Structure formats: C-alpha cells, structure tokens
Length: 506
Image (cartoon, rainbow, N blue to C red; front, side, top):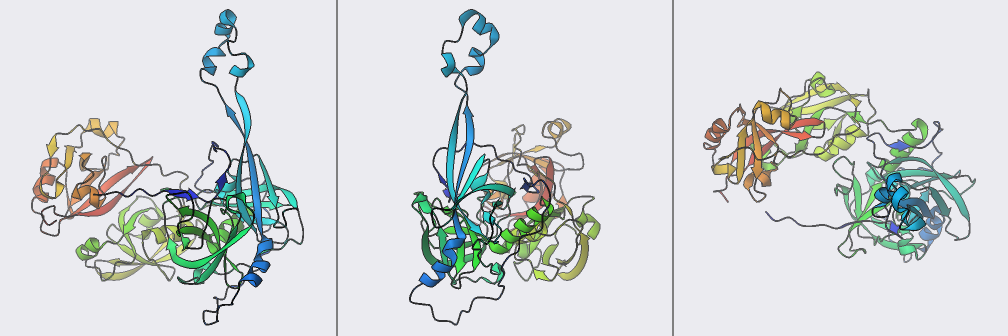
C-alpha cells in the first residue's frame, strides 16, 4: 500500500516561527466577557445568475469588495529558556558557582509577528478571519484597504474546530460585505480571492469553484470541514481573506492551500460563509459554541459494505456502533443502520452527517431516516452535547504470537485477557480478539484495521479467541470477510464495520 505525502500550508504568512499554545476546546473558545446582540449583516441568499454573460473586466466588483477586506497584524510574546537554565538557576548551584552566563542565562522574551487577512461583515466593526491568524495573539492591529486607517482589535471568539475567528474594532459606518448563501454555490462558478499575500499589499486573483463540501483533513480528527475548493490563486497572507462571487458577495473565508512549494498550486480551500456565519453568530450571542451529539460511530458506505448489507446506494452514513445511554441508543439506532436523511436533508456520507449534527444545538429533536435490513425506517432523536475531547487512537504492545492466514495475512492477534484489558484500558463489555501487530501493506490495514483494535465479530458472528477468529476467517469467500471492530479513541471508544479483501483475489 502506497501512501502519498501532502503538504498543507495555511495561508497566513509567518514572519517568525510561531510557538504559541493552542486553546482547543470542542465547544469553541470565546473571549467575550458577556453575550452580545448578533451583528447586523447584509444578506443576499438568491443564487448567482448563471445565465448572465461575464463582464470584460471585474474591476467594478473589485472596487465594491476591496474596501471590506483588511490586513491583520498579530503579535505575541514568546519566552525562550536557554539550555540548562533550570539547572543554573538552582539556588544551591548559584551559592557555590554564581551565574556563569550572567543575565544572558535567564529566559529571554521577544515578540513574534504573523500576517493575515480579514473581512468586515458589519458596519459597526465585526470582522471574520481564521482562528490560526489570531490564535495566541497578545496584540492585534487591523489596517483597512487604504493602508492608512488603523485600529486595535479585540478577539470576540475563536473556534479552532472550524478555524473561524471573530474580531472587532471600535468603529462606525465601515464598508461591510454582503453575504451570499454558500449552499447555493456550484462547481464551475467564477470566484475572486481577495487578501494580502506575502504582505505585498491587497491583491485579487480569479478562478472557479473546483469542488464543494470538501474535507481535507487539515483541521485534524476532530475538526469540522466543509470547504469550498478553488483554483483561484491563494498564497500565504491570504488566510482570513474573502472568496467572493461575480456579484461581489462573500461566499467563503480563505483558509489554506495544498502545496509542495509553499505557494499556490491551484488547490485552495475556503470555509463556506454559511458555516462561518453560524459560528460567528453563536460566538457573539452565546459567548461559546455547544455542538450536538448523537452517540454513534459512523463511516462512509463503501461498495463492499453496500454489497454486504444489500444497499441500493453508497450514499449515507453507515452506523458501525451505538454507544449506550446516548441519544442514538434512546432513539433506537442499531449497528448496521444507514442514516440517509436528517430533518429531511439528504446525508451524503459520514463526514456530512457529523457536520450536520455538530451544527445543530444540543437538546434539539431531529428526525432521522435510516435503512435497516433493506427497509426504510424513521426515528426521532434528541441530541446531547458533544464531549469536549474525543482523544486519539491508542496502540497496544505485541504480546501475542499467533499469525492469522488467508484474509488476515500480515496481522498478529492475541486473546484479550485480563492483563491486556487492564494494560490497554479496554472496557469490560468489549469482548473479542486484540490486534497486536499489523503490516501496513496488508489487506487488513488497507481496509482500515489498526494495531490496538479489538475484533468483535466475523461475518456477524461474535468471536472470543484468536483460534475461533482464524477458523471463521478461513471460510471467507472471494469477497473477503466482514468484521466488526472496536477502536480506542482517547477516553472513548467506538465500533465500526470493515470488509477485508481476500489477498488471493488480488
């Protein structure tokens, strides 16, 4: 199995190496002392006129939107401790030897600077930008497009999980951009990117929307991504800038690029304005973001799963596990269900459902349409509150010596005894066979199995020992074998289904 290395470049220009601590909480971070009235926005939710002929020049649009895009300069104080400082600063050492380095041996403080862009969205000074532009900043300065008007800005709130931040300047009658409905943006629409690349000054580039609803993985395992992808050149310094349509309406906040050189290579991403607007309004009015929680382990429907579960489509979110005492369990969701709609809106895949649930406030009743055993079923769930942290995947040591054959080529297993259960902190209700070692080029790894996973079922039959598992796996046909596995994720765990292809078939 070959793995391709991608280089992600956030579009903020870093003048010196940034070493600030990230404040990441599942519900977003707000620095507002008290809730405020949401900003008054200019909205235009109709779709762009796709039958109109493009103008010979976009100068009219640029003159309209350019004053609304600002430069953001952030400064943070960083303290660097010299090597061995704690040892040389010890009172006992100084009593006998003094300070061999003088004052130069003490921690040194200096300022680090970063550059980004922002978009004015209300006349009274609310500005949208990226979280990574202002994260950890001690001082934020905003410079308007004229290059002369400057303001001190304060952070209203930040949401690392969408990379959206809201800052505000004390001003009136500022030029504010009109917001479009990004749900109506389509692939092929012309767009302009406006920002301050490399600090050279405000610049405009042109391209099209290359994709919608894109998840890049740049925000990490617990980020919420629904990016607009564009080939309009975006470079360092464009972070937080505007992506506008041909009518001069804001459709996205420029966020990052995929690049091997650090410059634009035609693959840029922007946070859709509907998502950014939702985050902004909740940060301003509530002072925080509380996200909905269903309590299921979900995955996308693969062709192999669709075939196994006799599904007519690969759309929807496949339920690999249901956590006990959660909204999902109370609603009656079961492993093997496929969630196809949420409140009448189609669910494209697991990432889409996760985003839809997260954007819905806790305690909200939602209607779910699911496919169970080939039949449609409707359920109602009352969402809970998303836990603050979901953690990462834990890996176990290799304490087993039994190697499986057939579809389990390249995998080592061990019976899950009390010692392993305690060592790896595996709950008592999780019963199965532990994956202790895995070849990354094996069919099981290709299917998504990882070291530290516990295999619960083979072909819908529970397994308790490695011997039992090997026996069931040996009967696998040409289509491979269906597994249900449990994975540890920080302080939580969840189950999912995998289909491991038969190595002989390849």
